[in-house]
Amino acid sequence: MKLSFNTWCYSSFPAWLPAYPIDYVVTHLAKIGYEGVELGCASPVAYPPYMSAEDRRKARRLLEENSIEVSSVLPAPGGGCGNNVASPIAEERRTAVRNYKDCVDLAADLGGKICLYVAGWVIYGVDQDQAWEWSKECLLEIAAHAKKRSVVMAIEPTPSDSNLIETPDDALKLMRETRLDNVKVMFDTIHALYRKDIAADYVDKMGPDLAHIHVSDLDRMPPGTYTDFTFLVDALKANGYDGYLAMEIGLSGRGVDPNVFAKKALQYMRSIL
Image 1 (cartoon, rainbow, N blue to C red):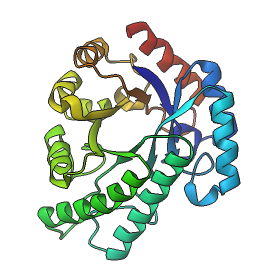
Image 2: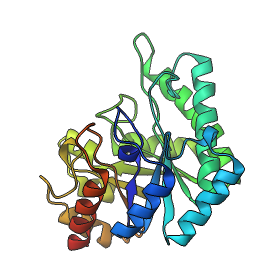
Image 3: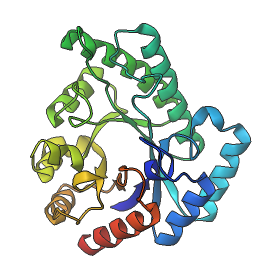
Image 4: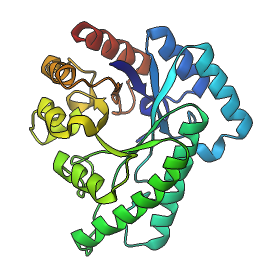
């Protein structure tokens, strides 16, 4: 298993935060000791429409020079454009699909192999089954594009943030309905904690289809702040998981030093790995 750090807390998402360009982020994470970086596709770190072909070549050289790789990418859900793949607004779904394809292309251009899929949310007046079908249609189109770029789409249950894919079973059901071999599943410990579930049980449930993991303690604090993650690590070892553990933390706004959070998370996870 390898450790990566998500860049949300370096890139003004989801609220105003101290913001840093990609060269700062990569060099600092490499110095702290991370093997991977998870690119939250937001400005100023890595918003695909703002990154030219030359920008991408420079970013790839930067990654190689610092011996750090892109573990995964993910788009920013919500905001003005919505990015809701389960929206009743057709143009919003089309915009979200374009954004996902842009993220897939950025991952591939930088050597990444995984793009996370947040399946959207059901808004007032929309039937749950219809929202599911819209999300699946979008995922099928995105995953077909991702397959051409050798990228895996990993469906994430997000019950604390959305209301469509809330459990491991939901994610697995959507995965199976696509019938595509580059669609897998993942989970974030913060959502398991939100549901008062046992994160280690998610590992057994997802089994060989588990492609990626987000690690976060309560309140998006570094792991080990409140919760013992040793049993999660034991379950991952028992199931032969050899992917990345990505720290998705530090999203509370002002007062968060992302380098401090990154260092604390790394030290704790190394101590239990």
